[in-house]
Image (cartoon, rainbow, N blue to C red; front, side, top):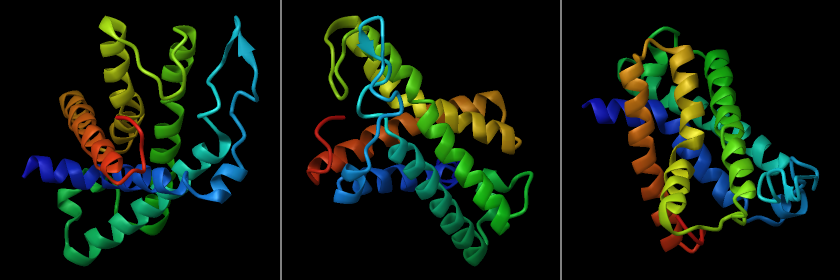
Length: 192
């Protein structure tokens, strides 16, 4: 039951991030891809690279917000507020869901940036991989970077303990890999 509760709590992030992957394949998204780093470099390498874009950041905020509003409605309709930790300290209301969803999306997108910055310093192309210890390190970091931001949001808005936040990150990493595998099967993603 705890895992179901955690999945329900994280569902705005899961649904929002999956929606961004689908949206990123549209002509509208591709037409409006402007890199956050403005094409600038730091010590000979791009700061973040072409894959970290303003439209991507805004998409995470928009889709996580919509997903949080949807989750709130579903929780209200089926009486699931007690199962969703996002409602442990706050009522399931429109403006709270709007705020929490936007915060989830913003944290998700912003917490990916340090990872991208590090990967550029190690000369790893966007979407690229490495072998050896650094490959394992970056694979793990790829799975948890945005989840650390989402755990921070959960920590700020709920009564979750530090252990629970760690559990959210670990469960989120497994969900992240599963969703990426599913998107690969649907030919919507090239790698995990």
